[in-house]
Image (cartoon, rainbow, N blue to C red):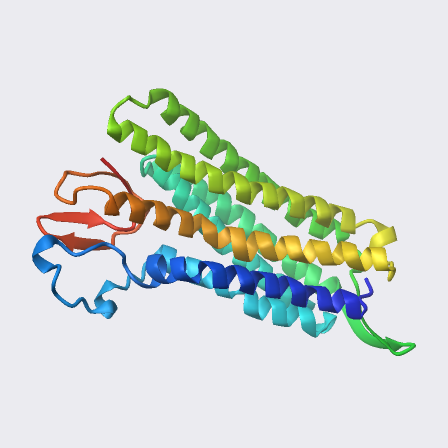
Amino acid sequence: MPRSNLGCGLPVASFAAVVYDWILTFGQEFELIWVSRVPPSEEKRDDIIDLGQRQRWSLMSILYLAVRYAVMPYAITIMLSSTVYFALNWITISVTTMLCVITITRLHAMYQQSRKMLICLIVIAASIMITSGVVGEMVNTHVSGEELILSGTYMCTYDMGTSELLITMIWILNIIWEVLALCLALWVSVKHFRERSRSSAGRTVGDCFAVLIKTHMLYFASFVVVSCFNAGYLSPSLANSSSTVAEVYYGVLEIMSFTQMFVLGPRLVLSVREFNAKLVAGSDVRTSMTTIAFQELVHESTGSSSIAMETLSVG
């Protein structure tokens, strides 16, 4: 699979697009990830709040930051040469695993913290991720690469050997997981929409699930697009071609991969934080709250009430 200057330069454009998205959403990230936005109670409104005490380092925060900023080593690796293909492979697997944990957390919350569902999801996801890791290491052993300069054009080439079937296995495993996660999310959402009462609590629950499904569907759509492009790239006419069409195809694939992992992936967490912040800001903190737990036990004291800030709160 040869890569010319165009092929090596398109990842730079992909990285720039991710950085642009990061700039656009940094305000939200700072407010919803780095600093808690829950307003102080009436009695403490005039007090100065230590920002260090308002930070919340929880599982979702760590996963968000890890996925969001993994773009830097990913971009550097993909721009160097094919001799570090194995590193790129493992970064992809690591980011995919973290996104898998985020998905499990969301589904666990949507299924009312069902322990049976959590165990089932962990077993299935662990089996898929471990198998993908083993197969990924097998792929690395079959890959050989070299750097060439032909007619003044820099080219990065690597030979996948007989690993195309192994790569296909990894994609199939990931597709199985994503389809399963989507079906589970749609099932419980339809169930909640049907059972939703006409009370304000019911409407808020519906809004909560609408946010979850909207972001999940968008992420799944990007995953499908990336999978289709990856499948097409296995075609010998593209894989072994150095034409401009092949380079552009590879560039589009890289842009979509960057978008899926480093833009839409972090938004799975950011969208929930934003919804929760708006919900808390518009509600009476002294009113008893019913929560859909988001697998995090960080609480903010607000007068006579204690609100779980890492939850989707409805009431």
